[in-house]
Image 1 (tube, rainbow, N blue to C red):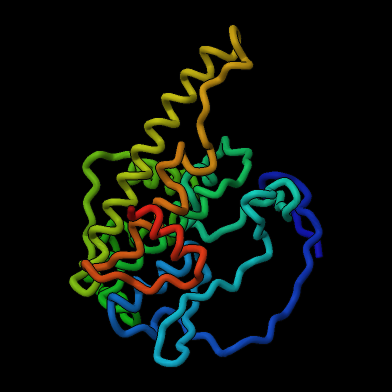
Image 2: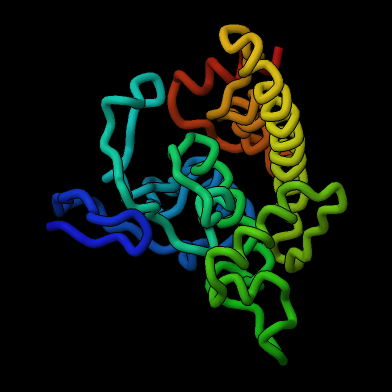
Amino acid sequence: MSYQSYRTGPYETRVMRGIIQEELQPLSYLKTAKECAQVFYNIFQWNIMVLEKKGKIYGVSNDWDLAIWLNNERDGPTSLFRTGTKPYMAHEQQSINWEGPHRYRHDMESMFYVMLLFVCLYSQPNEKVPHLKENDYEYEEWHRRDDQFLCDKKSSVVTTALFTLPATPFFVGFFMWLTELQGRLRRGFFHLGDFTVEAAKQEASQPDKLPPFDLETLGGYFSHEQIAMILHIFNNEQLTTHGLEWQKILEALSQ
């Protein structure tokens, strides 16, 4: 199959595959805020489903068509089209001037918006907050507005020093998570701005001596390790870390 992109011209050929797997449940299946936290800790991107196995809750991601190994990015699949669901896409990807590339931090920023809208617009996992008016909650309109509006709003959210979180009572435990994630995004984009200015100054005179900066993780402020350190604790309780590799990483970072 091939498609026409409304921004970038012809869309590359894609392959559709089917997967047979264990029955998964939507997020509305969850009963407690801690179960929701466990799922978000497991999965740092959208298309989140839930698997209950032997009394334990697991977060599962189904959308792997553009997945790549982080240490081998150039050999992974690509897309000429910026894929995503508008309310949850990284704000840079919704700018009219964005030309790529897709970076690791874009997926992490997307996860931040998934949590943000979930805890602000739902009174519990299976019940949306009832509204007297459509604009009672500032994030409600994110589902209806265009890319430029969302780019501007999200840019303000991730760069403001006055971040507020109108979480519903059921999800109040997410306050610490989201404020810490927003703080890391804010500091990361602040340092990205400094790097951009400094790089522009040196490019003409000393292009081989540009200051080091990890664009994938906003200079390390929004790395997988840093996010895992935030998300593995919820309401002062340690969540289950699946996988020996990440258990070792968390142990090392905690020392």
